Amino acid sequence: MAIFGVIGCLMFIVCFFTTTERVQPIKEENLNITRDVKILFKNEQWRILSVYNFMMLVAVVLRGGAVVYYVNTVLNKGADVITLFMLGSMFASMLGSILAKPFGTRFCKIKLSFWVNLLTALFGVLCFFVPVQYWIIVLAVHIIISIIQGGNGALQWSMITDVNNYGEWKTHRRITGMNVEENIFVIKLGVAVGGAILGWVLAVFDYASGSAMQSASAAQGVTLFFTIIPAIFYILTTFSIKFYGLTEARMNGIVTDR
Image (cartoon, rainbow, N blue to C red; front, side):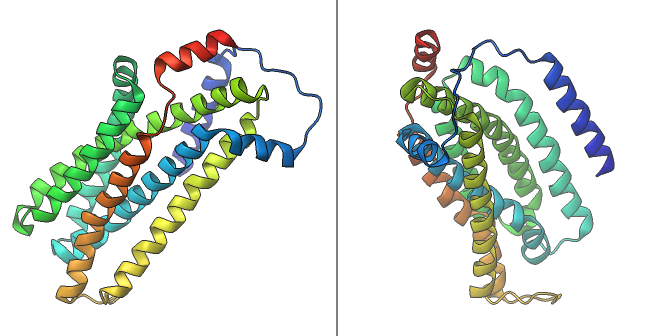
């Protein structure tokens, strides 16, 4: 964690010194939190993106939290295979983040997000039908999903920026701090709800914590929250992005108008 902390600090410093603010914000003399909250909720694109972020984070947490349970309970594998799943997912997510830039530049972010979430849901359902003896296939699909999700995370944050710029254009007030903070709140809410659902599903299917042997019911529950249940939330995420209207062409027009 110390190494990650040092790397993170260096990256923040590089970002600070190499980023130039080219758009001058409208200067505001007074602060009124109640007014700014009302302005925030008038931004219909922010409301849509909040639903999108919430659904996606629930799905991400469900699937990520299920990995260890799935490998132990369903695949009956130990720490070596768990390490393959965890490390493979981590490096795959990094690769996905790198690929987000060229794909996000070439394709419309809305269409890209739609297909990314839809494909993630379909791959998750595919894992449900793979026999446990072919766990290598599950690992390969898991890594593919991690690549896709890594790219989706980068797209997610670029849309948060677009929503903020759209809100300033629409209301003539720039509330960047509140916009970002409320999105982070929604994301953390999705993390919390995803974690809660994970616990509820385990309880419903009689998962015995600390037990080396699990019932067939528990194994079925673990399989569901590694495959089908996250896929449902990815489908809901796919549905929500259909209402998002900040295309590249529209954002270019907004930036020009500002």
